[in-house]
Image (cartoon, rainbow, N blue to C red; front, top):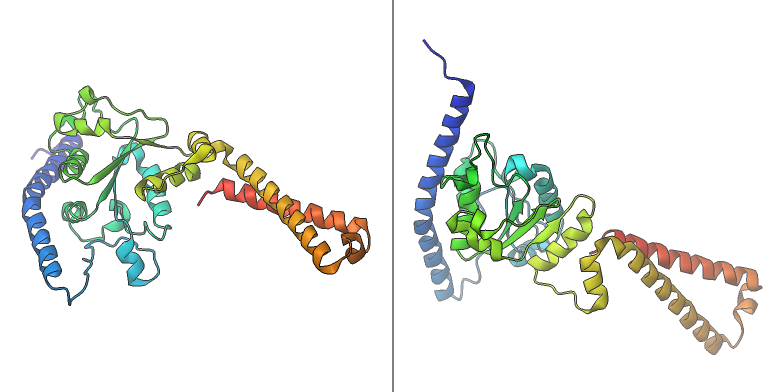
Length: 302
């Protein structure tokens, strides 16, 4: 009795998974039609009120009660495990801390043991309005023979991106750690619209600043003005700019306090604090506190 080579067995498992995925995709049209009928039924019955479908996976929702969860933006993170697994997991954890971005589907933590991997992904893809496509240097899934998994119609990552594009979902490409956006001619035909979308860079060394830009994009928040554009283009300058802002705010607060003190008490600060020494200590403490708060704010923009 001969034993299958381990590499052949691995390929057979991948083929089985991909065949199952194709079958799942064929069922999505029926599921979407059923979902649309339910929405129409809910609209036709105003006395019932708005309904929010519960997700079939164990994603984490962060918010203040049911109202916050209903207003939260659902997220689906598409990534290739041997490409951006660590950065994608860090991204998902960071998004879950935001009150309006708490409903995040990330396959490793959102699929419980004993449940169907393919079925859970299918359900998540039919309900999530924003799809984040993590693109790293190995996103195409290169093989030793020069081919890539992305060129195969049954590839899971290809199917996720295609379903998001074809379903009219919001798709945001994320370039991981210096990766470049693939050109349209290098992509399979169904995925070529992806290359025309505006991408966001995500790097370990400027993770918090890059995540702030990503959250702004997801929530469609704009940062107008010179400072906003400067921070968007040069996130490393955020601590310096916010520190300067904190310094200016502290000086304005001191000036306002001094004016009010003189107007209300009709005496100088030296008289109130017993000399110029305590006054300068107060000024130094307020300036230092304002600068420190500005620096901390710049290290982790909200």
